[in-house]
Each structure stands twice: as structure tokens, then as C-alpha cells.
Length: 250
Length: 250
Image (cartoon, rainbow over all chains, first blue to last red):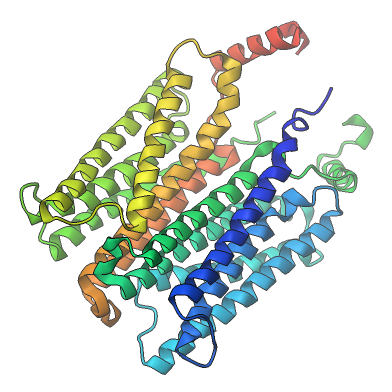
């Protein structure tokens, strides 16, 4: 009998392509917003602030989203290769985000502005710490050798749930930051449909769309990565060990 | 053999209780914020605006969240009863949100303010329309008689995914609205850790927590509602019809 999953996996590449189109548009549009309305980007000037939104969107939205999709895109490669790629993309996202964080704290310091007073900054710091902890715990469980199969299996659903939640919280935090940047600069002019306001609103909707499409690809049951032959054998061995059956009796 | 789901379902009531504690705290704190720092609530005055955040938080956050949890809480009742309760809670949420929407549009009209210019309002209108469409489609598929079992089964995962996404988008929109209300009133004073700013930031984190806890309860595989005897029989009949096997051969 044909597996019930096989017919509908066909649309997966189109959804992945669409997510990449959305993600790249979000990054390009963040760049366009900063270039057209905020004077561009530089480290050693008042433009240092602008490093922050660009790095956060590239790291904690685009790269993080793509790290989550690795298991849906690389379906037939060895599990370990896919795991390493997943971990590396998250490291890249973390480093990019760290540059973005240093930029804003350094900018605040030079300008004498207060730190961590807004809802955006509270959510941002919280989610950055959670993201780092999630990476450490994920690394210890799944890439560090010696953790038992049963412990990994028990932790896996938690890792997936918190990974998706952290990603969504990053998207939400980006929206809060965008809104903050708009209101601080435009103030009452925001209500006159200034080009910057409209562009930033469209960027906000695209951020939401990227989050929804990544979540859709992640949660569709028939698009989950099928276990490879060697993983099935491992899982079978484990069952044999714990349940005391011989493989032939399965 | 004992079902593998039974041992871990034990913690479900505690998580549900915690979600309710969080949800009620969010509603109470929204009321406290409006009462302590915004002069309270009234329809026929400048306080009409304050009806908006309170109704949206009660309707599109608390009641919508609870509507999603109905299938996890009422696990042994007839499916139809649970469905009707799910649909009714969503109607109540929709009506409450509609009052909140009328309040803000009416307030804007009286004050001569522009409508629908901000990211909060764009997300808000989008998610309200999506919520209404989701309710109509859900009603047509699941409560209106005559839709086939197979069509319902195919639509169910989409309904669940979009339901959860709409709920999360509502939480995100609430955060944007809260931030907008803070920045319009406090402006640069926001950075001096004014009591209103701190209270609203805590409210924002509680909104996020409510969203995460509801999502956790919804997505935990072993907490899904088990099919009741009569539903299993129906599903068996359907399988028999489509696969041409006799029930005894299953």
C-alpha cells in the first residue's frame, strides 16, 4: 500500500520556495527601509543604530526560520549531517543577532540613552536568552555523544515546541521594534500615511507572513522528515532492548 | 496494554488551571492599567477609547484562547456538545471584539482621527476578518449537517493550524496596540521606567505567556482528545466504505 504521506509531499518545495521568497523580501525591505528613510548603515556614527534591526531580522527571523526548515528540506541526507546544518545555521543566527545587540547597546551608551525599558527590549532580551539556552540544551542532547536514545526521544517534542515558540516570539519582537522605531520618528505624522509608515507596515505584514509560512511547513504532519533506514534500525534495536522482544517478532 | 497517552495526561489539569490564571490576570491587569492610568472606561466620553483594549483582550485573547482549549478540557463529553461549546465561545469572542472595534472607530470619528494607518490596525483588521472567515468555514464544515466525513477529515488540520495562527496573531496585535498606546502617551518618558510603562511591559509579557501556554496545551500530542466510542465506529464505517474491507478484517 502506498504511504498516505507521499501524494501531498509534492507541494512542499513550492511552500519552501515561497518561504525563501518571503524571507529574502523581508531582509531586502528592511535594508530598503534603513537605506531610504534612515540614512543607511555604518558602525562608527549615529547610523550604528541601524545595524540593530538589519542584524536581528537577518539572524533571528530569516536564518532562524531557515534553521527550522532544515529537516523538511534535507529529507534524505544522513540525520547527523542535517543536525549539524541545523545547529550551524542557529550559530550563524546567534552571532548575527549578537552583532545587532552590541550595536544597539553601544549606540545607547554613546548617546546616553537608557537601556531595556521598553516592551520590545524586554521581549528581545528574554527571547535572546531563551534562544541561547535552547541551543545549548539542543546541542547537549542531540549532538553531544552519549545521551541515550530514550532521553533524546523524550526531549525532542519539547525542543520542537520551544524552538517554534522562540521563532514566533522573535517575529513578534521584530514587529514591536519596527513599531517603536516608527512612532519615535514619525509620531503624529504616522497617521498621514507617510511613505515610511506605509513601507514599514507592509514590512510588518511580510514578517508575519514569513512566520506563518514557516510554521505551516513545520507543522504539516505529512511533510515531517521520514526516518531513514539506519534510524529505523536504531529505533528497532532500542525497542528490542527495552521491550525484550527479538526484532523478528515485531 | 495501557495506552501510552494515559500517564502524562495527568499534568493537563494543572496546565489548564495555569492558563486560566494567566488569562484572568491578563484581563484584570488590562482593567487595572485602564483604571489606574487611563481614567477608566465609559462609552459616552473620551474614555470610549478604553473600551477597545479591554474588549479586544477579553474577546480575541482570553475567550478565543479558551475556545481553543475546549477539546482538551472536555475530553469525555459527546463530540457534538464540545463542538457547539467551541463555536459558541468563538461567537462570544467575536461579539466582544466587535464592540471593541466599534468603540475605537466611533472614538476616532468623534475626535477626527485617521483610521487604519498603523501596523497595529492593519494586523488587527486582517486578523478580525480572518477570524470571522475561519468561524464561517468552521461552522459550515463541522456544525452544518451534510458535509462528508472525508471532507471534514481533510479540512480539520487546516482549521486547527489557522485557528492557532489567528490566535497567535491576535496576541501579537495586542502587543502592538499596547506599545502604540504607551508610546503615544509616554513618549520619551517611557525610558524613565514610569510606573505605567513597567505595568504595561509586565502585561505584555503575561500576554505572551498566555499565548505560549495555550499553544503548549494545544500541541502536546498526548493531550489530544481521544476519539469517543461512537466516533471510532463512524471512522471505522467510513474506512470500510472507502477501503472495501469488512470491519472484522481491521
